Amino acid sequence: MKAIRVKQFGAPQVLEIKEVSDPQPGSQEVIVQIKAAGVNPVETYIRSGEYAKLPALPWTPGSDGAGDVIAIGDEVTKWKVGDRFYTTGSLSGTYAELARCHQDQLQPLPPTVSYEMGACLGVPYATAHHALFGKARAQKRETVLVHGASGAVGLAAVQLAKAAGLKVIGTASTAEGANLVEEQGADHVFNHHHPDYRQEILGTNCGRGVDIILEMRADVNLGHDLRLLAMHGHVVIIGSRGEVEINPRDAMARDATIYGMTLFNANEEERKSTFAALNVGLENGTLKPVVRETLPLAEAAKAHEIVMQPGAAGNIILQP
Image (tube, rainbow, N blue to C red; front, side, top):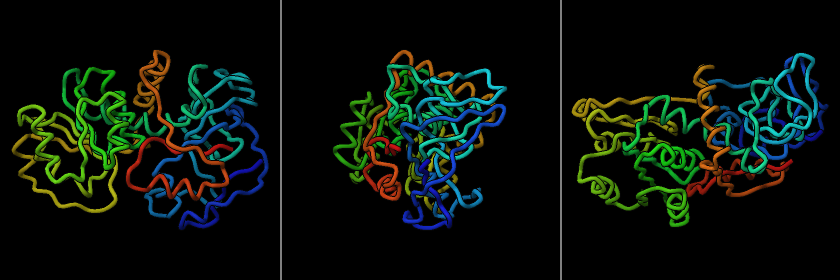
């Protein structure tokens, strides 16, 4: 089979397509044919070597994907050959034609959901759900500000928040991104390059502030976020690319809570709850992942460049 392999950490060009041996299933494992693989920023951090936990080399990236089960281990009870799935992780990496997964790393993909859409689910939607409901404990009629709402996690958060009855404010850096966020149901959308956009956010509810902020660029926004919060508000840090200076008094004045999170720290009970909720949303049609661009597997390096560019507008997919 063909797979992307990384022999040394570095720039996107270290992503090389190679011919490798087909994987074989262990007793509780399945072999899946990847029809679409999701590309996430975290994979670029790992590839570059700038991540806390680095895999042994050579390495095939990817935890998100969707396709069909083609082989099962002798103790697998949850899956049969031919089942459609989306992944919530992988033992061998999803940037490949075939992947090896533990049976618990797969979720059912409804026939109404395309493989490309299924490949958008694992990291982006689970991250958004865990941030909103696992960390911030979002409640109906609260107001949430999604910074960077046109990216994969941001769009997932907008859809999840609207489905739960929250008022949603989103930010984006381009007109295309803003239009996309509005199409997904956001009540207000602002361009975060506009000099007065924070004041405009406060104006949406008479200066009260927002209950929850989901923050994709804490290194840029965290110091300002605290001044946008309502009393007892929460900021959930989902992404950051550097250090930031804050005034602790801004948090003290509001009895604010700042959460840091990464999906990989969620425990088994939290993961089960998250994916159970996502599966309900897929079945009833409230969750509709947005695919921005689909590239062939051989162009993984280009996909890693695109996913880190400003002005995100949906998910990047690799197609083996």
